[in-house]
Length: 164
Image 1 (cartoon, helix red, strand yellow):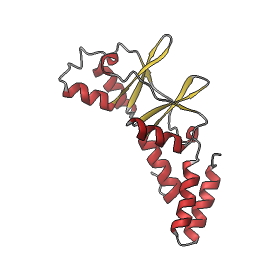
Image 2 (spheres, rainbow, N blue to C red):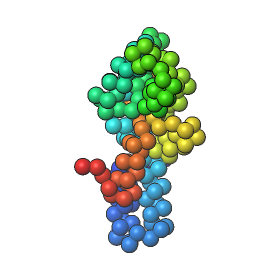
Image 3 (cartoon, helix red, strand yellow):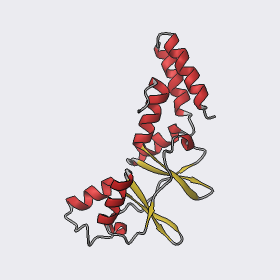
């Protein structure tokens, strides 16, 4: 069962009125963890050719303000390139103008379904040690959720703290 944003806000208001007792906060946290992941996505996914250089991929990520790109082959997503992959490539002294994204990207793509919850996302990220999860509907990637997206959502739903 997923919580709606209105239910989470009602739970937060009740907790604040009750003086924020631990048992009340736990109820709000449970509501927040059932929040639909599709409502947490902040933007559509960004795709790139696997044979773009990591320099070009890093430029795209920087200009778009994202921490990951999905590498897309004609038959579908093949890998995910993240900030961590780029840091590792630089640490390994790979030439960013001569190294293809596919050479350093993570091939094992862990993804969420559009009907998954915030809890599902957190559990997947912790279990796999990752910070970015594509969201799929009917096998098609429709969005991306980052650890930052989850932090903002949980802060908003449980503490009433939202970014400006």
